[in-house]
Image (tube, rainbow over all chains, first blue to last red; front, side, top):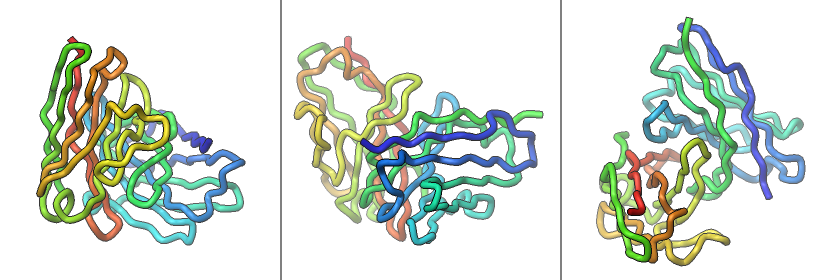
Amino acid sequence: QVQLQESGPGLVKPSETLSLTCAVSAHSSSSGYYWGWIRQPPGKGLEWIGSIYDSGSTYYNPSLKSRVTISIDKSKNQFSLKVSSVTAADTAVYYCARLRDVHFDYWGQGTLVTVSS
Amino acid sequence: QSALTQPPSASGSPGQSVTISCTGTSSDVGGYNYVSWYQQHPGKAPKLMIYEVSKRPSGVPDRFSGSKSGNTASLTVSGLQAEDEADYYCSAYGGSNSFVFGSGTKVTVL
């Protein structure tokens, strides 16, 4: 059973950078898969943010590409998300997930990030 | 990359069937057989219910089925049960390693 756990600050000030980490369970290596970040503003739908392969290749939603960076640390079995220049519109529950082929089969529980001064 | 279109709500009585549509374009839903469906209960993470249009992951009841015609995919829940009441989201591969989600449908069991 694959387990993912998001972590990071729950409150970020406008114009600053949002940083989150997703830890992948020790008994499931991060090697050989794609991994992704998806977010959900309160009361709204899901939005794909981007994906990363264990080789480091990254793919981003064009609407967020200029502000998003996803990276991976295989030695720690974790991958990370950074969103720069955040505004209130970036307030959302952020999920990390495993991307198997072209679907997300395992998800973290999600973490709420609020952008507010 | 616009969100896929889903009806905001759908409902049915226990034991009945409900079908949810998911409309995209020839660049996503219509272009690949890579449509997946996710169930989300309030305050919980999404759960994969269907992948590659009509395949069910292990542990998902066969009451859940998926299909696709042209630019529209569908999820059917047969024999509705109380625990099926949730939000449902479709997702499609959009080419070039990109993905798009649907707007979501709230299913109510009457």
